[in-house]
Length: 214
Ligand SMILES: C[S@@+](CC[C@H](N)C(=O)[O-])C[C@H]1O[C@@H](n2cnc3c(N)ncnc32)[C@H](O)[C@@H]1O
Ligand SMILES: Nc1nc2[nH]cc(C(=O)O)c2c(=O)[nH]1
Ligand code: SF4
Ligand SMILES: [Mg+2]
Image 1 (cartoon, helix red, strand yellow):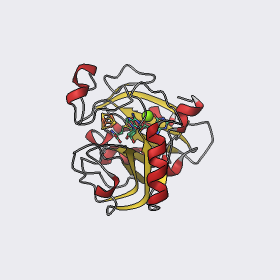
Image 2 (image 1 turned 45 degrees about the vertical axis):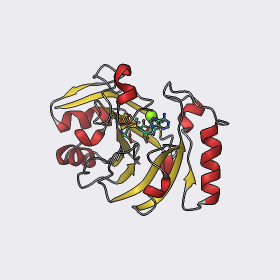
Image 3 (image 1 turned 120 degrees about the vertical axis):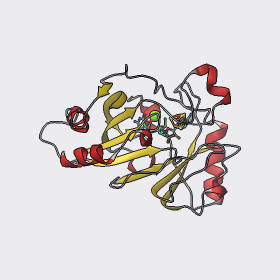
Image 4 (image 1 turned 30 degrees about the vertical axis):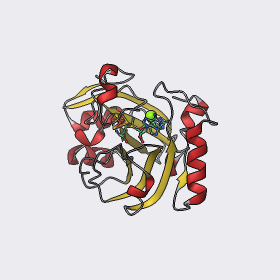
């Protein structure tokens, strides 16, 4: 059974695929926070901007078979159009994403992107893996397509991750958990300054919050 909070069609807002159309599949639940506000202060990840609790979001639900969920996702792609891209996020998608679902999505022509906190092993077959480390947690994924670090985090400075085998290194300024964004915040200024001084790192912004597209 797959527990899905919501499914929606929009543009990838962050990282190397910014601007690319995608269906987002937001899995319910996370291993670093219960999702309840009263637990946020003591959670291992405490700046989350996302409601991932339950299956009651737009186009969410419980799906018994991987083929059922893959058909549901495919229904959000424009008819007769290729370039299919699905982004599995959450919550923490690696609590639920498995080989049968990967196979069912590939069978329907999707490239598969994953947004993960990196604390759980990833199944084979993911086409674009984005790891976003959190606080003092241990990253167990050794290779990824992009390492996208929310900045600043006292317990997760960029130097901790600069030797991970990633094709792209991004700093994403921390935004308020309420979903708003300010492009002239101290976090944005600090991320710009860090990239200028450490050119291994590139800046990415949560452009969907600037554009108000989801
Ligand atoms: C909600 S998480 C879900 C996927 C996975 N659990 C993870 O943390 O990567 C999706 C993306 O949003 C980012 N994110 C969450 N809260 C944020 C915030 N307050 N400011 C900036 N990025 C944030 C995460 O770092 C991650 O890259
Ligand atoms: N447009 C848009 N792009 C995103 N990229 C990663 C997101 C996420 O929450 O995982 C996200 C999201 O929530 N919306
Ligand atoms: S940002 Fe990711 S790891 Fe952190 S609480 Fe939200 S879903 Fe979990
Ligand atoms: Mg988001």
